[in-house]
Image 1 (cartoon, rainbow, N blue to C red):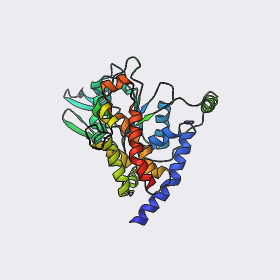
Image 2: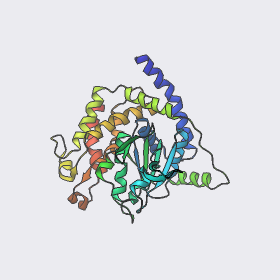
Image 3: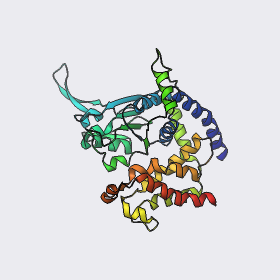
Image 4: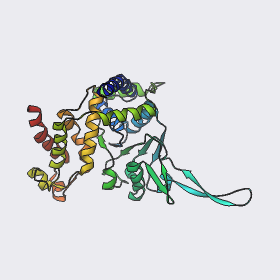
Length: 333
């Protein structure tokens, strides 16, 4: 059994390297963002891409649909978008004999890769239409449950809340995103490469590397990868250390955090550290993976108190402090 798993891991390595190269032909200088998005997909989860407009978030999702061989749909979220515009609805049809019957018309959510563009521009009611789909991979319309295609992933882009016309995502929906990925401005050299590559007569196309069956198989490999007891303990220590009511929490967390991450955060870390190890060509995750993925997994699952926000406290600093306190002794050992 172990030998068979090793063979599957070894076979995936070169293909994942090809997928990275294929994405890099269209996404320049965002290696960390690409790796986190691929890790989310290998884990079978969803990703929330945070950043200002014009940083390539939409382009990344479209490229991944091609590279991973998935059928994709794109929804542009707007203030007037309704849940039926996402899930679909029943329409009344009249047959030639005069009889009438309802027919369900599928919405764009019936895709293997759904791009929710600027998701926080829609109302919370419309945003919540994705809750069941993201967790159970099915939707219920008029009392009837319909399964979504497999694999099913939501890659959502979100503008900063400071921009006009945005709504905060409900906490229950945020928790359903496996990772939050911050997309930042490129450095000068990268921006120069982007300008030269995207303003010519033609752009390099992305090549398909995976297909849906291969992605599902890779997700099975991730779930079968071994995780040492020490890494499991680090994950639990980190998640529990970010909860203000836990004895293991630091004084800073107790003072500044209104609510911390739940068990779903620990599940997300267990999956993403395995996926990251697989992307790096390693057979099992280590403490460095826990520290590296702490921010993407925990940032959207915590909230600062009002007083902490007024004082300018940052969640990133609290997570980094907790991760350093938990992971550094493990590395030393």
